[in-house]
Image 1 (cartoon, rainbow, N blue to C red):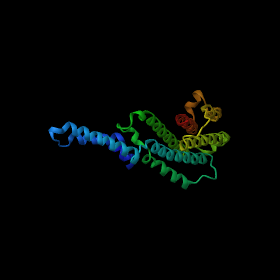
Image 2: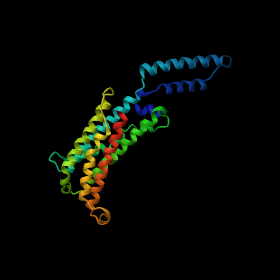
Image 3: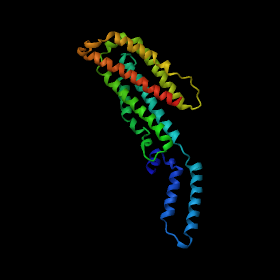
Image 4: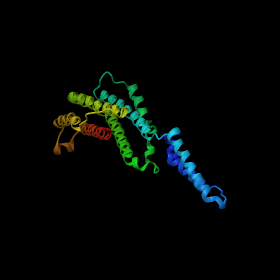
Amino acid sequence: LLAISYELEPTMLCLPLLIAALLLVAILSPYDPSSVTYNRVHDIIMGTFVGTVIGLLIFPDRVEVIFRKNTLSLLKLFSDFFAMLMTKFLCMQEFCSAEESNLMQAIFQSPRIMPSWVYHSGFNPGLKKSYRYFLSVMTQLCETLLSLHSLSNVINKQALTIFEPEIKQYTKVTQQLFDLIISRLRDEALIVDFSSQDFVIDINELEKKLQEHLPTGLEFLSASKEAVWLTAWARDLRELRTKLLYIAESVM
């Protein structure tokens, strides 16, 4: 509990930690045998009262606020990184190698703001399952983006020109999904009309067109590296959308 409270923020001294510390002091402190029961009960009651007041007024529980703040920062970073990647895939003039370098550095530093304290054994059991699930999906989302970045360095951009309309539509819809999730996390009271079916049509169309231009069956065994890379690229785009939909469904 001490480790969790320290990692969250100095203001995260939670009520259970205070009560546990007071009980420990009461049990281990020297005592007079003639009045041990009265004194200990008195100390525990007073300690609980003081701990409750401090926990409610001075050190309020802010786990949800801190978790949302950290995940918001990560999602904004992932959104910017995705936009940069799609600009690179389409060889658009807006692409900037300096921006790519800065975003890559930020991505590699992202574990510092990952709320990894949800994996501590002392974390609230009632929140543990949902928070860990959310964070695991965020981690998978980051890994998919890094996989796409690796492919952006080996795929022949000219091979993507025939898919340009589908790629632009996929980019637009994915960015809308990022914005939707970020807006919802910023404002819990925001009412969003969300349906996962609205976010699969574009990726299905992209995959369909890709299949029309790639060898199938036994021909795939002798396919060029370019065909293999394009297949991996489409798989990562699908995986990215799937993870974003998981996140959207969990926050709506």
